[in-house]
Image (cartoon, rainbow, N blue to C red; front, side):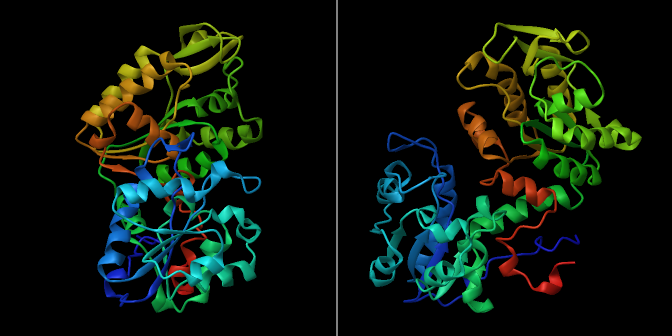
Length: 395
């Protein structure tokens, strides 16, 4: 595989961490409501790295962001994570500032939300240097954010010599799992792709088509492709800025044969809150708002899943506030769970759907990254991984 991140592995096992401070850039960005963690999947995925460092007698400063705060708002403070760590026998000290983190002698220190510091999103060199002073080693295990060009990810590691910076076990697992979809995936290779943000999906489609994937387009993504063919999509969500790019893909005969479309839809009357009905694709109403797929499409997708040997799913389809709209995608997720194929779900919302549907444990690999997983499979540049490869490795 000629992909410059594909061979990255963690050097933690070869590192002498005894009595050393390890600055661990983690991704503890979990959904929290009224101070309670709704899903701790990302935190649990971090445990192997945390426990390894502790076993090797290292001291840890955990640096993470939480949400998208506009200011130092209490509901985005990483203090809310403390009970989870304590519950998992990871006793820690909270540091509101970098100076507090540096002075602490605790085995584990949890730093306040990185996005409370202006220098993080501004990619400020002084902030990156100050953050680096918290550790003798730098370990990045924040796969969900490696597609971001933020100070703690791209500049801070450069203040450590190459032998003192590495990825953690979480990122190593992500790379190995996603590589199976990039390096001669077992055929037939089926991709189920939906949701919005089509600008992030088009590069992914192009990359996966190179792996001879068949890509089943689901709402809301599919509606832009319908519009690009001058087919009726009613009042559905359409990205006008990406119509030309979608049309270009469809104009390629070989590509078009690999793009699969629903044969019926679950459609709301006039807008997302309207009365729900099923319509065949060729009878899509002009005042309809596409929500999900219909029973015939569910049956077709289920058949495709049964015959596939590799499957990638990124399709948060339906609205949680309207549970009845989730029934089609839950049936597809159930079929995915029963499949013998190598199954991967990428995308924060898509993983959450799998947990809500009660099938997460039966999926072969759940990625902690949303945009990062899509970017990796698109073979895009991932700034947060660049510090761990040589320049000659990027070709």
